[in-house]
Image (tube, rainbow, N blue to C red):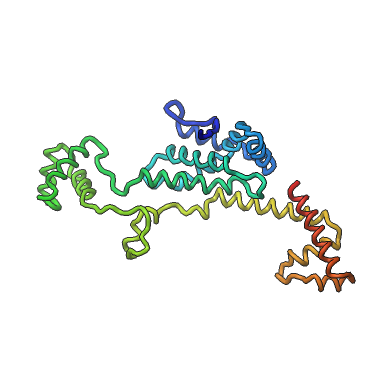
Length: 286
């Protein structure tokens, strides 16, 4: 049986999308420690309340990703709902023991779910969207082989007969005569044809402001934690770690070089390095 999470927010006939977006915007942002604890509770205890809090706090990122797909004529609300499914799948599969924030892991599941929805529902050519267009569609389809592209007087005559304007007739005729375009890019096609593929217009989220801010925050947090872990070492251990692993010039000192400098064996330097790395690892995990 598929397990679902009791996400508190939803939008329907009695709640507008704007109210949902406001509620999502006001959702609390979890710290790395809070996120890890909630993920642990869900993983080890199957605590659905913990899963709900994880999902709730990340709904804003679903909205951010979904906005990148609004150019396909699909409702933003539907895109968000599909993205929420991807978020729940991500929470279910998230490994809290890894040093990766949930948003970095979940964004791929969110985007994949929305992408699949777009592929299932979007069409380059949409016809018969209104009652008048449906009537016009069947008349044009019946006469298409005989008429080919209609002349101005034929367009006006048919428009008057069906009680629609001439522009509607021309638009529907253009749709009927237009070629279908594959969603995915065919690498063998000429450049002039390839750019028309809808997949070529999918949003590029590499520079998404929300993700960029999260990544910058994580980088700053990791740098601070590394600095604190280094500060906890004695001077000799810290110097060895910096010379072996953190040299800005990329010139890694060898065990022999450090052994000669400190007047000990290379094996002793290796042991000091190993112990220092273990201390740092323990400090970073705590």
